Amino acid sequence: MSIVKFTDEDVHYAEKILLGSKTFDINEKLPIIKRMDTSTSVMACPGSGKTTALMGKIIALVNHLPLYDGKGICIITHTNVAINEIKNRLGSKGDILFQYPNFIGTIQAFTDKFLSIPFLKQTYRKGITAINDEYYYQKMFQRKKEITILKKYAYGKCGGDYSKTDNYIKSIVLRRKDGEFDFCIGNKSLNLKNKSSETYKALYSLLVDNLFSQGILRYDDTYLLAQMYLEEHPELTNYFCSRFQYVFMDEVQDNRAVQNEILDKIFLPERMVIQKFGDMDQAIYDEKEGTESSAFEVRYEISKSMRFPQNIADIIEKLRVEPHKKALKGNGSEDAFIYILVFDYDKIYNVKDKFIDLILKHNLKKGKSVFKCCGWVGYKEKDEQLSIKSYYPAYISNKDVTIKQVGLSFQSILEENAKHNVTVGLIYKSVIECIVRYLNMNDIMFEEKRITYFLLEKYIKNNMTIEWKNLRSLIVREAINIKNYDETAFKLIGTEALHIVLTFFEDCNEKKFLKLFEKQANSKKNVLYNCYTRDGVSLLFDTVHGVKGETHTGTLYVETYFNKKTDMQRILKFMLGGNIKKLGADEKKALKVGYVGMSRATDLLCTAISNDTFKMFEEGLMELERSGKLQICYV
Image (tube, rainbow, N blue to C red):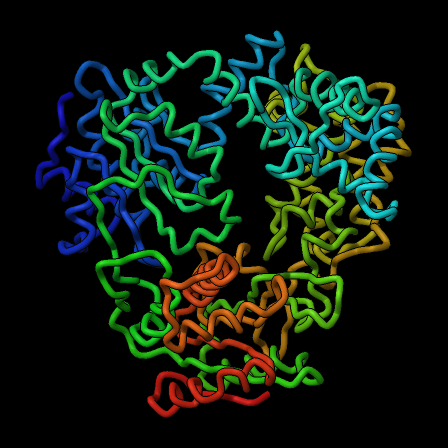
C-alpha cells in the first residue's frame, strides 16, 4: 500500500482554504493532519476544532487523488455539516471527492447505498419504498387486522393501560437471532417462541411481510438489512478494503453499537488506514448504543478548546470519565462568569429570570449572542421529578404525546422543521414536504416510482413553471403572516399547493387536502421555539442532546431527575473531588451529559440546583466560591 506524504505546499493549501492567513496549531492539529501512514484515534475536547483538522487533512489529500492503484478515500460523518463545508470551500476542485472510487457522506447514506438497498433488491426484488419512521407508522396502523391482535397483546404488557398500546406496538423492532427474525423492544427479545401463536403471526405479517420486505423501513431497519447482507456475503469485506485506501470517520462517539459492528466488519486496519475522530466523553447516548469500536494504539489528543476560557475548563475537567494524558486547556481569553444558582421549589420558575439578570448585569447581550437553557431530561410525568418543563412550563418535549404524533398537516411539518427561526426557504420546504407526504399516504406513484421531495421539486420546476413561481411568490408575500399563524395565509398556501397535487392525483379529495392547511387548535405558535424573552434577551430551552455541538454565549444547565436521584447529585460528587475510577452506570451517564451541557458556554456558565441538593454539597461548593472558581447565587 502506497502511503501519501503531505508536502508543505499541501498543508499551506489547506490552511489558505480553511483559515485564510492563519496556520494550523503546530502542537496538536498539524501532527494529526500530516499523519497518513497508520490507523489512529483522535480524541478531541469540546470546541477543539477537530472537524477543521479532519477537513484540513481531506483538502490536502485532494491534490493526491486519484490514489495509487486507483483506490479511493471514504469519509463517514453523522451530519452533512462538514460535507457541505468542504463543497463550499473547494468548489469544483472538490468534485472528485464525490466521484468513484471515493465516498463522502453520512453513515446512514453509506449503509443505504452499499448494503441495505442492494440486499433488499437482491433478496426481496424490491427497491426502497420509504426510509421514514413517520411513513412507516402510518402504513403500520393501516393494517387493521394485525393491529387489533397486537393491541390485545400490548394491553397486557402495558398493565391494562389502553392509551399506551400504540406506542408499545411502535416500539417493537426487528432483530436477527440465530439466522432468523426476532421481535424485540430495544435489544430485549419478546421471546415469542410459539410461531403458531396469534401474536407471532400478526407481528410477522405486519413487520416482515407488509413493511420490511416491501421496502417500507424505519431508519433502524436499514442496519438490519446491512447485517443480513454481510451475513450472507462476508466477501464484501474484500470489496471495501480493495476500493478504499483511507477511511476517515468523524464524531465516532455518536456511533451506535450496530453501526460500529458493521463498520468493523468491512473496514480492516491491517488492509487500510482508518482514522477516527471523536470524544468518548461526549458519548451521551445509551451506553449499550453509543460505544467506541476498536480504538487504535496510535492515539492523539486535542486538549485545547477554542470555545471556552480556562476557568470553565477547570470546572468541567473533573467530569471527564475517559483516561487522558493531557489536562483540558482553555482558549486563553478572559475568565467566564460561573455561577451556581440555588433555588427553593416554590421559586423554580424564577431561575430563568435570574439567569437573564446575570446576562444583563455582565452586558453579554451583543450582536449574535446565543443564550440557552439545557438539561438532561425534558419532561417527566410526575411533577415532583425535575425536568426542563419544571423550570419553564411552556416547554415542549419530544416525549409530550401530543407533539410526538407528527402529522401530515402543513403546520405540524412547519413546526417539525423550524427549530429557531421560520424563513421563506423553510416555509417552501414545508409546503413541498406536505404535498409529498400526502401523495405518499395515498400511494400515488410517478413513473412507477414513489414520489420524493427531490423528484417532486424537480418536476414542478421543469414542467409546472407558472405554478412553481406562483407558489414561491405567494410564500414570499405571506411569510410574515405564516410566521404569525394567520389562518388566511395558511389557506392561500393550501389552495396554491392543491394545483400541484391535482397534477399527480386527479381524484384527490380537495376538501380533505385543504384541511391539511388549516390552522390547528393545539397550535405551538407561542412556544414553537421553546423560547422565553425578557428585556430584549431571548432564552432558548432544549435538552443536552439537542444542544450537542453548539456554542452559546451563555448556558444555563438545570438539574433534572433521572432514575431515583438528580443528575447534579451525581455530578457534584465528582466535581468536588470524588474518585472518577469508581463510577456506577448512572453516574457515568450523568457526568457525560453534564460535560456536554456545561461545555457549550463561552462567557457565562450557570448551573441551577435545588436547595436540597445544595445542602448535600454545601461545604465543597462554599470552598469553590472562597477560592474564586465560582459564585453562589440564591434565586
